[in-house]
Every structure is written in structure tokens, then in C-alpha cells.
Length: 175
Length: 401
Image (cartoon, rainbow over all chains, first blue to last red):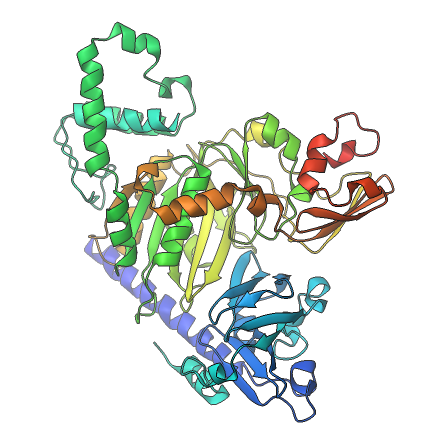
């Protein structure tokens, strides 16, 4: 009885060690910056005014005209694996910050996506219906999910939202 | 049916003279979740009775009118009293459930309801309301439940493409759309569902089934490349996952002694001649299935005890409580989730869009409503209503059924 509980502990710690190594590796590998050659960036000539991240692994790229693109980060896409279906909201859906507006399914997992700021959905990325794999190949570019009209741009300055540096630092934190 | 099952447990527990504590702690290597100071015979009887709870025979319906008439009236009163006292102590009250779920800490819940809508709503409630914590694994929770006959599809599937809806209804199965991803499965009283909740940070798809392989410790049970449990080449368990708000769960089925012959004709094959589907919904992976009852594990109770004991060992905490719940534990939120799961709106009016061509007639559906068709009179009709109206001998659409 005693010896079996020791081997159990050894098993558990080796499992944790292994999982931590692969996670840190994944985190170090992910480049979560916006793809500068795709619509979320090129929508305005000068690029987005503000790009922010959430601890739930979404990004939001806000443009001078008050519209903003939302997608999931490279880290999240890598962790989820091959996307097989993206559930998109209806245009005109009104969202509060933190509302779930859709989900990404990958390998039998349905993963909810949340809006970083309040606003109204003005466009959804229809390309994801036929090509959900864009979520994996270019999550911060071609794989954008929705475009919203932001209610109040001051929300982008919320303490809840992270800069790219803060987000990547958050990923490296070992809780 | 459900209340009668519960009734039986109530009667049995109290007649055996066992006091039921508020929290039922299972000693690590014990088969039943309470101390039993009786002979082995008593022990066996109790196990048998508990197994009968999940066995769909007429024996489960113990209190027929005839039985009641043949017994003394005072005995019926006695049973009712016993039932009342069970509800107040053995099964969590709504307030106790809320308190347990919203507090930090690990626990196991075993639902003694066999209502699939209640069980999935209970699971969703626990998932939504479990607090986030600083510690890496979060508040790990395990739910164990058995559903009466039902076909359960993933949230992003096309039910008309994946299932024979007509057969599901005519054979008395419920059709259920769950909140997680994945493919279609069939449940009955010979199947047990396990659900393991953890933090998004520490969630790994393969983790819990890897534990199960170890815990079941049977050389014939392995994992396939999709992470499913396999017994001698047959699938014995199917899995699905959900991730939201910093938390994640893995839930799976375990076929113990399901009536597999009855499963035939409920799930559709990949291709049906004469019907052509165009949709991006998630496809089920068809697999041959088998039961493991009598092979690696003897009963649903055994499986639940194994998981509970081994989970306590794994995290090195023998004090992890095991709670019992049934529909009397429902909070308003659980009732609301359950009603939503039961609604046509959730089942048929909010899934992936699709197009189907059946003998050259095209029907295009979005949010459950026919939006385009070669038969203009169909436009504007919910697809489920159209399906209901198709006759078995319909020359054009019979293959759609």
C-alpha cells in the first residue's frame, strides 16, 4: 500500500513535468502578433490604432473608424489543434465585453470565444465556414472571426485587456 | 420510472437501518459509500439492489398497484416517510448543491437521476459555477451519471445527417444535442457517463482516458489514436470536450452492459444512396462498439467506485467528498438549462446550416429553417416540421428519413 502510493506520486510528478515542458515550449513557439499583410491589419492604411489581448486568448484590433476585428491567438489555435468547425454569430448581434459570440471546434472540443469589448457585430468571416483550418494557419490574420463596431473606444483601455508584451508575459507565467 | 427508482433506494437504505450521513465518504477500497456493519449477505443484497437501479427491467418498478394493495397501508406510509427523510439527507438539496459547487475544492457527484436533460444541465451548471482558482489544476470535479435511452449529438453536428430521427422517436429514445463538440453516441441504462472538470490551463484531452486505462488495468484495454478507449479492437467509450471561461471538461461514455442490438438503426452510415449532403458540420466517426461489463469491470457501480477511489489516490486526498444528486437537487439555473436543452430552438433551430439534395430536389437550411428549395412551398418551413411530414413511402424523400 505504502509503496504503491509512492510510485503514484512519482507518476503524477512526471506527468506534470512533461506537460509543463510541452506547454512552455508551445508558449515560446507562438508568435501572437497580428499578421500585417491581412485584413485585420490592412483595413486602414495606417494599420490598427490599438491591438489588445485577453487572458482567454482572444485578440482585438481596433481601427480609427471605430470598427475592430476579433480572433483567437496563435497560442490558443496551437493548443486547440486542427479546427473542424467555427460557429459564427449573426450580423447585428450586440455583445457585452466578456460575452461568448461563437465557438471553435477542434478534435471533439468545443471552445467558446468571448468578445474583449462591447459592440455590435457588423461582419463575420464567412471564409471560416468552408475553411475552418484558417484558424490554425493564420489565426491573427486570415483567420479573423468577427468585425464589430465598438460601443465605447475607452473600453480598449480597460485593465482587463493586455498589450502583446503583457499577453506573452502572461503565457510565460508558471501559475 | 425515475421516482420509482429513487424510491427503491430510499426504502432499501432505511430498512437496512443505515443512517445516511450528509456527506457520503467512501473508504478507499470499499465497494459502497457508507459503513455497513452487517454480514456479507446484506452487503451483497445492497449491491444488487443498487445495480437494479440502472437495469431496465420490470423488477425496477417495485411498487405496482397490486403490491401496494397486498401490503398493509401503514407500510406505504412508512415508505413515504423514509422517502422524505432520504430527500432531506442522502441527496443534496438545491442549497447544498449550490454551496458545494461555488466553493473551492474537489468533489465527485453521482447523479441518481436518469433524465438526460437534467444530467447534462447539472453538468453544465457545475461547469459554469465552479470558481476559478490560482492553483494550476483549478477545482477538479468529477460527475458520474447514467441516462435513460437517448441519442446524443455534438453541438456542431447536423442531426438529420447523423441520425435516423424517425427510429429514435419510434423506439422511445430521446434526441439530445449536447453543449460539447464531437460525434453522435447512443446512451441507455447499461452505459455510464463520466465527466472530468479542470482548468483550461491544465486541460489535456488525453489525460483522463490515460488514467482510465491505468485504473481499469486490463491488458485488452488500450487507447486508439483518437484517444478513445478500445477493448480488443472495439470502442467501449466515446469522448467529447468543452472549453470556456478558463475551465474545461472531458466527458465520456462507458459501455458496461448496454443493449447494443437496439443501437442498430439509430445512427446513420456515412453515405445513404439518393441523398447528398453539403455541410461543414462535424462528422461522426463510425466505430464498432462493445460492452466491458463482465470483462474489465462488473457493473456501473463498480466503475463509479473505481473512478472515485482512484481519483482520491491520484490526487492523494482520501477525503474528497462523494455527493448524490437527483432532480430534487435542481436549482433554477439547472431547470433553465434543462428546459433549453429540451427545446426545439436548441435541438433543431440553432445548429450548422446545410444543403441536402434528395432525388434532385434541393433544400437549403439555415438556423433550422428552409431558406431555398426547388419546391418553393417548402421555403420558410422549419426543417424538423418538413421531416415530420415526410411519409415512410414518399417517393422522393423517403431516403432522407
